[in-house]
Length: 72
Image 1 (cartoon, rainbow, N blue to C red):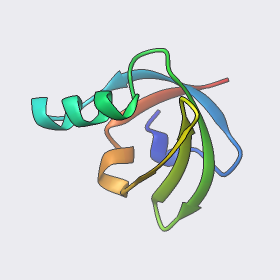
Image 2: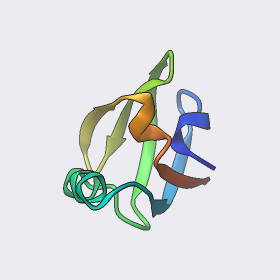
Image 3: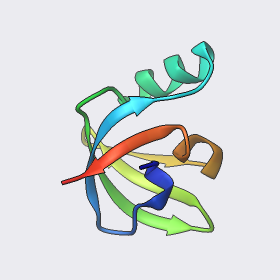
Image 4: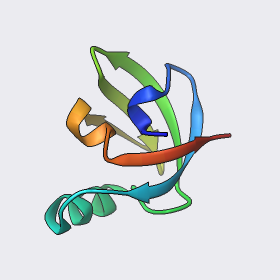
């Protein structure tokens, strides 16, 4: 399921990152690689703040739809 379907407080693991090569590289540089653990900090109209690798990252809905996850 896409990360955009997760709720505040949910923990999940990245299973796939979609998008064009530039988008994939951008997300990988932020830490969104297969197997990375994500904790959703807040959700606001599809935009999210997530905790990944001890960093907080803000993502728009277009990016959260490209990150496929499984709940923990």
